[in-house]
Length: 72
Image (tube, rainbow, N blue to C red; front, side, top):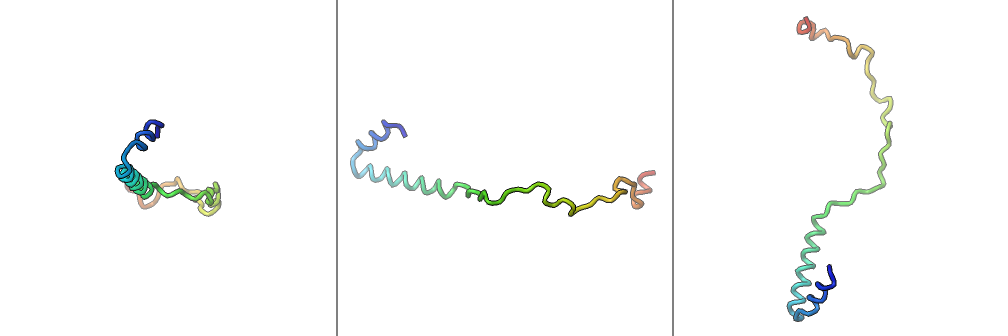
């Protein structure tokens, strides 16, 4: 907020200034509710953690017998 805006707020009558500050507080409260939660940095990704858990057979690229008639 610019310095001029603070001066403008201070120059308002007390009753109006209270309403402005209450409005600002309600806007801040709404904004806080809409902010996405901060993710916890405690979990780090470990690359290669599943190494060896899956295997591909040697004949992976070989034609399948079920599709033999489609291949002809």
